[in-house]
Length: 346
Image 1 (cartoon, rainbow, N blue to C red):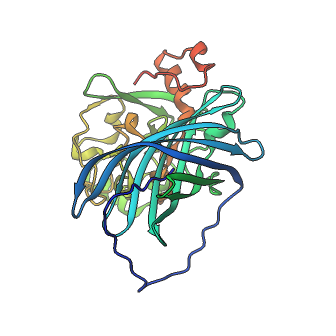
Image 2: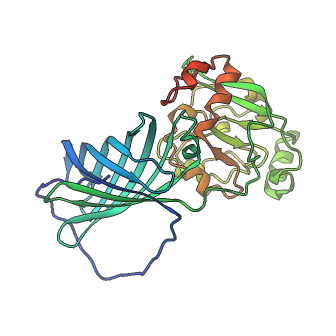
């Protein structure tokens, strides 16, 4: 899912440092061939690069149980002066049986050889199709190539091998939990649930800097539960490392104390505006602070936060939307039978 237009643009090439790197990929899932159907240049800048909106269509040939079908996608990409291309995509795969898999992806590429573009795309998606439900747990790593002369795309899709995580956050969350709070956004529309019971024997219970920070504040340490449903952060495991805040490309998270410097237990039913620190990993007030998924609704499912969290306190799973809907009282069985994600309460 790559595009490199015929545009007069000089890239720098350097062979000064060549490091062999081999990445292990999982099971091969599909072969994809397609063509760019349109693009619109939206910005040209000498240092910030060339930005454009791109659309494409392709045919996917599934391997094993991965479905074959027609793929339509679009997105925004930027190609920088040093030859790196960065892109974000979204689209829909429609199978021969009419079932749909809605996907989101982030791509990194490099201009190589005589102008070809090669790179890697990380992709996740969602479907309500019972037959394709196994795909909701997939993280895909796709090797892609683009030929600027023919405008043709070729992609080979693989299963990302590190799908099953051993994590402090309950792997069956929120199945074994119940709602203990509703943390609202001040826009009056969005919110996320807080799930309990929390744990008093989690990572923070034995983390010296966390315990010392609680004592310095004269605040009682105790179970806090999990904030969020589709983007869930176990606040009993979170010890304010901040890697997720730094990694998230759409600022889903913020340090909660930078907006409301109150005991964490009081956030369970609070209202926040999302005006806290959401860029700086070191922006915490102290080690009692927590990463709050205040903009859970903005998540693009790139899984960056999950991969960088040291205590593995984050679980991102679009399939948990049903739990959010049931807790909201808005779950619709008929909509859930469809192939596209249903509209949700927040």
